[in-house]
Length: 268
Image (cartoon, rainbow, N blue to C red; front, side, top):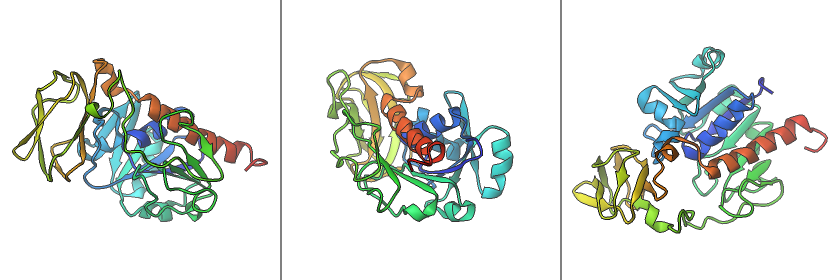
C-alpha cells in the first residue's frame, strides 16, 4: 500500500486528519494542496501551517512546504508529507496519482471529477457517487459520520457546529465584518466569558463562554462571517493539538474507501 500516491485537496483540520491516518496506515506518498493564505482556525492540527512556518508536525507526523512536485521524492524518502500552494490542483494532472481526496470542506463540489485518478473520494455535501466521484464520505455529525457512500450523496450542510458540553453556536467566533484580524489571546489560552479574544479591524470579538481557545485564525484579512475562533468548554489544552473525533471518523471512512478499492478489487 505504501506505493500508492495520494493527492489530498486541502490541508486544513479535516484534511490533516485524513493525511495523518493514511500516513500512519503505511500510505506515505502524500501531497496536499492549499491556497496561498490558508484560513485554518484549528491551526494546532492543520498541516497547512507549513505554508507559513515551512513545516508542521501533528501527532508525530511531519508535513513540509514545497514549491514544486520535483521536491516530493526526496521529501517522501525523508518521511514527510508535502504541502503545496496549488488552488487550481495542477499537481493532480502533473502527478497522475492513484487516489485523489477532496477534503477542501467547501460544502460543495468545486470541480473535482472522477477521471482525476483511479479512485476519487469526495468528503462532505454535494459530491455524487458514482457520477462525479467514486465514493463520498459523510462529514455531518451523527449516526452516519464517516460512512462511505458508493451510490448517492452525503447529508446536506446544516451550518450548525457540533454540541460540546451543551454548547453549539456559542463555541464559534465569527468575523462581524470584512477586515484584518488582530489577536488579543493566543491559541491554547484559557479564556473567560466576556473576554475579548481578538479584533477585526477596530471591532472586538468577545467570548460567549469560558474554556480553552482551541482554534484561532492567523492575523490575516477575513471576510464577514468567516470563522475566526473556536472555544472548547472542556478546558483541556491538549485538545488544541490533537486530532478531533470528527476528523478521525472521516479519515477512517477515507481509509476504508481506499482499502475497498485496492485490497478488494472484486468488490470495487
